[in-house]
Figure 1 (cartoon, rainbow, N blue to C red):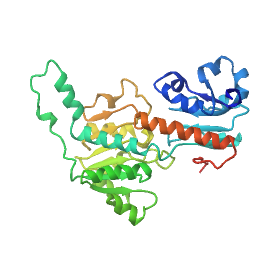
Figure 2 (cartoon, rainbow, N blue to C red):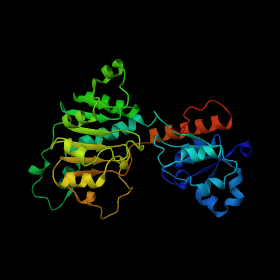
Figure 3 (cartoon, rainbow, N blue to C red):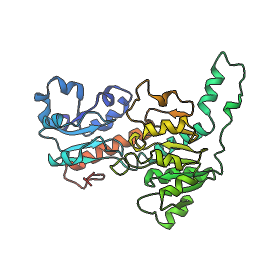
Figure 4 (cartoon, helix red, strand yellow):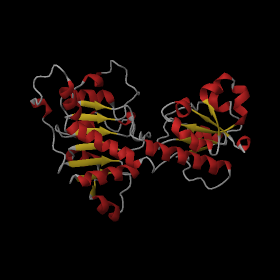
Length: 327
């Protein structure tokens, strides 16, 4: 019966926004309370909430909100990155944290390749010229692009997403280099034609396209800064589909302005969105999208399904498919 289902707190976007079609997946197992309705009377609603479904960092999981949820058992995050969640603190309240690795890999890898291609072949600039009513020269020299086929792609972070990016690069006959905390098996390397670089510096020096696919952590914050950008080829492009904080944006602006590197293609920045007067927004050799790497209907559906599976497992005391534990 409906009344027997546990209550879950969700963001308004999931209930009323572009993800409205996905709520039936949640409602199969939970009664839903939108965050905006929760705020009307936290004292009334808080005690019945057993799960929080976090989508695009909402609802918030700050201490004040969590303290108002005495029955909470699980915070189920949509997506892999959990840098917006204080996992040790949440766990200290007796609450589990879960995420959704794997299901986002293909969509994110597609986005990485799309950014790489769009930047290399200046697709956005070409579109703008083609639709501009004032255009007189439809094929200016400025649209001369960079060859992708046969070039070298260096992937920093060879997890699920990194491997999927490598597969796509292989389809373009690219030479694939990668740097990772742990080397993949020989079989995994051979499957995507990837060569391991023990030193990230070697990858930076050799790559025509450097693709960032790492998780955000204290070790990866500011991973790419002035020194690393200076190691890259002046003809190289930086592609970031990980997290904005992985790149020192001030250093990136200087590198692009001085033509230390050729271009950057970014699905992530810090903050998101950037202030409208941020210098990155005015550079002609930058392509920016609003963190939409996982935003396909198919992947969104898979994410929500996995969030529900994780939450149900916690509430039933079963083995949790994707529990996140403090490192």
